[in-house]
Image 1 (cartoon, one colour):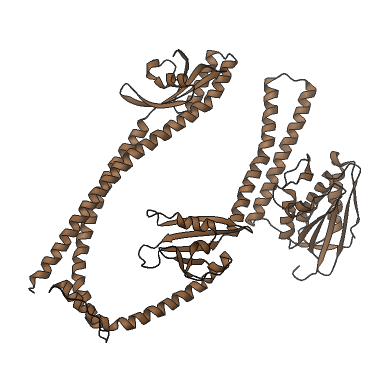
Image 2 (cartoon, helix red, strand yellow; image 1 turned 90 degrees about the horizontal axis):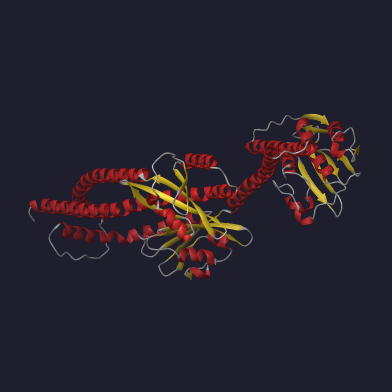
Length: 588
């Protein structure tokens, strides 16, 4: 073979690879361009029309109310201008004949023929959207008919120029063209360089194979031509002598891989192309709660939900992931990957126990929902009273009652805000706990005197005689007073008028405890495990006002002082016991 032959081969491979890559690249860019730009323009247009339709639908209620109340043109003009500023669009109110009733751009030329969407909405009696060209300029339009019974009386039109959509599409087109050109130049340089390196490595592979492949393994590869590939085949014939040791090395690596899989906390299941399990580690068996003996059909080894996830794998979706909640509140996250480069192993399932994460996420969602609900009620109440006081001439007695009720709602909001702030500080660990010895009876008596002056609790009794004066706890005195205040407030609210709340206590060598007991209706047994949850208010709460945060705060305060809190309730009355470290106890 002449010395010039390898050079010709290398140049040929480099040229062909560059040409193929260039053609594929241009085709891909053309396809992407033809797909992305129209899709982008369509989505931006649809999004803008949807936003305009939402504004039109939202504002139609106000215009219909104004129509039914016989609003003046001045009021309608103010309304259209106000809504136009919010929507950043032109707002028009037209009658069924196409006559203009009100326009946010008062004084600007108006032609009913420029708004065909209004006629369509009136005829179909439903909201309509469209893009219409006016004076060589595209405008997005949304129209919502206003009905009085079964009759359309007016139509609201929201109109806005499509300049922003067209500018965005033009910018994307320009950037896509520039990026494609730059990428093409870089890619051509890289592929041409790599192809040269690749052809030179062929000779290196031949040389390396001859050096490492000296053994007794007699497997020959036919040599069909006297060129670089023929020489490479000869090198592989020499390397055959080392295949035996290579197989032994592979076996060793497989054993190491098995040990690694066995030590993983995540479950791993390997599946072949026919849907049979060919490998599964002990963690997978533990998570799924059953023995897996490969080879076995996957459908028999995993729950139906996981099998459906695996079965839904498509050729264009190399990986999928989902979370399943199994019986017993166990949540498993399953990640399914397609291994296209493996001859036998086609799919890999990785299973992880995410029960705790799912519970935390659900708790977060519940907390947000409950907080929103608790804020919404007093805010709506205040809003209603304010509207009445502003719009109606009420007598002094009614005004006084309204103001008292509004004060209650404000106090409720303030209490809720304080409680949420306390919980937030406790969760973030910024609450300062200053521990020192203090007499528990003194704290309880101080809090009891506070409640004896509260108007709503003057007909209740508070008995603290069962709490020995000599009990000394080691904790934060102010936080303990806050805790006692929460428990005593709860006990008084849920006790019938004329009843007595009893506070008693005792101590041992390590702890001091006190119990606040009321004579209320008690808490059903099924609700006891949830009384310390945030915002939880059982059915026994009835119409008694509260946020459902007090006992949660009490629970956190006890925990921060290395204490504990327990609740007991029978058919009548509830007792809540708090345990704190005693003065002189180990760790106090």
